[in-house]
Image (cartoon, rainbow, N blue to C red; front, side, top):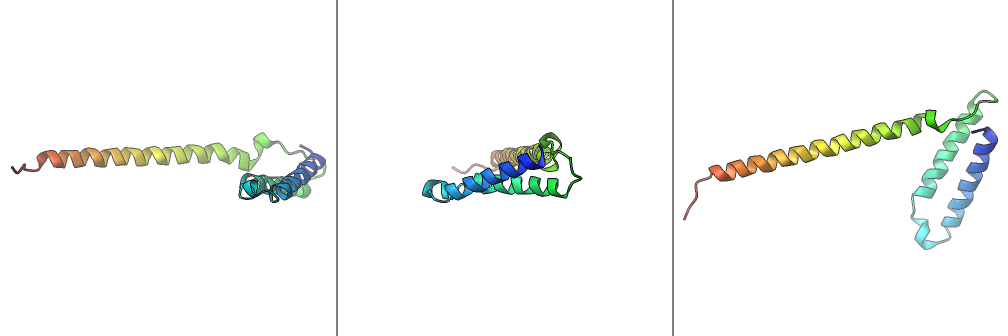
Length: 102
């Protein structure tokens, strides 16, 4: 992606955020501002880079970090689930050992 293409995409994102703010059902949507922020970041990267440099989203730090963050979140959820299952199994064991009263 060239500097000009990023600038054009940034302008579109700004326009979309302005348009969305005019509609109550879209005003709270976080995707527009998030996309705008990403285009601003890309535009800054290209503005600070050597002239003629193009941006490749497949090599962008943010884009590359997303799968790693998703994998880490999934691993954390799985660990929490395993711990909850371990606690439930232990509670069942303790309940089975408890003397029964009639």
